[in-house]
Amino acid sequence: QYNKTTSYARHRPDVSTLVVSALNSTDIHCAGWASNSTHSSPYEEGRTLNLSVTEGVPPNKRAIKLEILRLIQPYTLSCVMEINVLDDFGSIKQATHAILKLYDWRYATQLRQDHKVDQWTRDHEDKYRAFVEQGDAAKFISALEDEDSTDEDDTDDQPWDTARNETFLVNYCRDLHSCEVRAYSRLRELQGRNIPQFLAGVSFNAFPIQNAFFEVRGILLELIEGYSLNDLARYAHQSSWQRICDKAIHTINLISDHGILNEDVKTRNVLIRTHENDPECGVVVIDFAQCRFREMYQSEADWRHEKWLEDEEGAIGFVMAHKLNGAFEYRRSYRFHCTCTECREI
Image: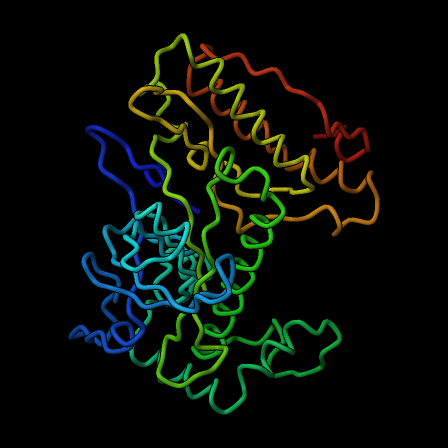
């Protein structure tokens, strides 16, 4: 999801912290318009956010107040920020600083570019809200998800208008969020060591009217102190490169052991956790919004085939071997080796 300079890691001492933030739902809705009628982003450093808590915390807590410390930009498939927890919230308060990922379709720059949807404007909001409030958004999504649908107004060969484009993005963000929450739940035993600790699921309403299609969903995660595997040569001594890269591949395979196929394995999504007294203490993998799961496949052969084609460990091993000019030797495990005709021809 993130460009080559973006991660959840906070570098120290001389590298700028990459962070995330969120906003008060009233602030979000009342943000002013730019002169060209495009929405100025509501996410700003120093602003506060009151979010509803949806999961992952004690049942008696239904809301949490956060302060945006810094934004991670450019936004990709989500809006990511470093935040400060302002109220007492159990284990989250102990962390104080955390990462907030909001799947806000309005300001997720890469998401909108990938799907060729123009920048969010007041006109987009007016048309989308009318589409939702008239009940057409629910019908549109139902038609998209129904393979047998004969609704000619919502078929793929018809050009979509602004309202349908926005509705599609909202639904797509729902899927990304659901996938990431599901992955973190499945990887619970790896949290805090091999992946960030999942702190809470959160949400807010983008507009004053309560409607599921106006809901922005997100997650709160542990903030990782460290650097991206992309920057290994810059921050680690060459004598440690082999060990760190091997550990990164081992971590990718640990995640595979839990029945997950991650379509977003990239060196920028692997962080090297550092502390003052232990500069190479652990490898952490982030970003699980684009995963598939073992139960989606009927047979072990189908699963191995998809895993072999995706080649998650190779996405780390081959890339790092090239990036480090041979100073790291990648030894492929072949644990999902598939010998079908299609794979043999690759």
